[in-house]
Image (cartoon, rainbow, N blue to C red):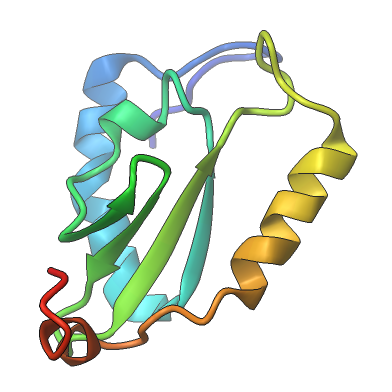
Length: 114
């Protein structure tokens, strides 16, 4: 197994992130999350696998094979430059959890928002 580095503030390389896309999608099929929080707006988020559903630049969903949606929200990494206070991040996650988002792709298709 490949690791990123030996200490804090070491980032995965672009090839590492690209290589992680397929295992990430396989993991979504296995654990079936309904919500995902991705930390790293400038390094991680642009290297995530493409989402099937786009609500905003920072709120998108992966469609699993069974049609269920795994909503994914991107936030700045807490240790990154220009990051926000953890209380603000916690509030944003709380709002994300409380959103009434469609759970299945068929719910989007009926209102024409895929």
